[in-house]
Amino acid sequence: MDGRRRNPYELTDETPVYVISIAAQLSGLHPQTLRQYDRLGLVSPDRTAGRGRRYSARDIELLRNVQQLSQDEGINLAGIKRIIELENQVAALQHRVAELSAAVDGAAVAMRQAEAQVHASYRRDLVPYQDVQQTSALVVWRPKRPKD
Image (cartoon, rainbow, N blue to C red):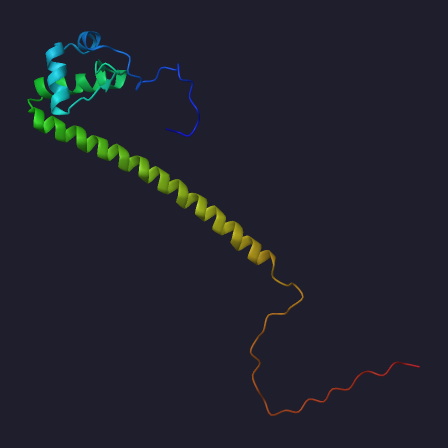
C-alpha cells in the first residue's frame, strides 16, 4: 500500500465484494470453472470467515484474461499459470525499479547539495598555489620608508 490510511469503506479494484455466482456472471464463466481456477491457483479470491469465495474487480479481470488466453490463444492452463506468474514478477520488478530510480535521484540531489556546501566553504582569502620555478637569483626585500 502507499502508506496513507484508507477509508475502510472505500472500494478499490482489489476489494473482495463479489460472491462466486456474480463473479461467474461478470466473467462469463461457469461457477465450477471459477472453482477449478482457484484449485489450480490461477485466480485465488479472498475468503470469508465461513470460507466462501469473494472476488474483486481485479480477480474478474484476471478471469476474463485467463478465458481469453485459453479460448482465443489456445494456451493450456499450466501455460496460463506461468504467464500470470511472469506478469506478476514483471510488475513487481517494475515497481522495484521505480523505487530504486527515485532513491538514486534523491541521492544525486543530496550529493549535489553536499558538493555545493563544500564549494561554498572554500576560503576566499587564500591564493591558489602555483609552482614557482627555482632560480639562483637573490631577492632582497626592503621595506619602504615612510616619507617625512
